[in-house]
Image (cartoon, rainbow over the protein chains, first blue to last red):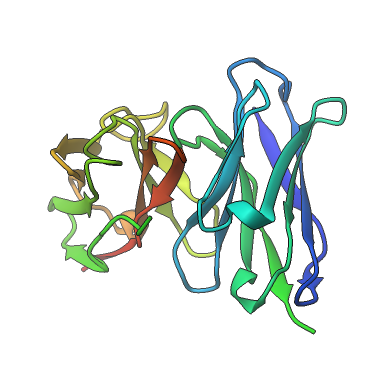
Length: 119
Length: 112
């Protein structure tokens, strides 16, 4: 059973960089058919796809966030990471990591972590 | 890229069927068979109900079914049960130069 757990600071100051880690257990993060994604949800609002990384290392980002987002995988640590630069209050959200089996279908999710952008 | 269009709310009585629509464009829903549906209970992570338009992951009841026609996809919940009350989201792959995924705005399903 694949398990994902997000971690990182709960509060980030405006204009700084949001950095989150997703620790993956129960299976190998390096399996050839596994892709990984970050998705967020502002309080009381809908889901927003941030981006994904495929097993070959290629990345796909939401065009509205592309200039500020970096997603990477550390296979030696079985960790997925997210970096979002120059954050504002609009980036306040619950951030989820997930396994993307194909085309945006995610059967496995972390529980999510709330990040608040505030000074 | 705008979000996919879903009705903000839907409702039905126990035992009835409800259909939730998800409208996009030829660049997303209409162009690819990569439409997914998720159920989200309050305070929980989304749960995958349908993928590749019509496929159900193991463990998802066959009361949940998906379809697509043109630029619109639909989720049908048959034999409504109280525990089906939740938020439902569709998503679609968006192809071309800047490939990514977009979600619908979500539909709150109320079981009367």
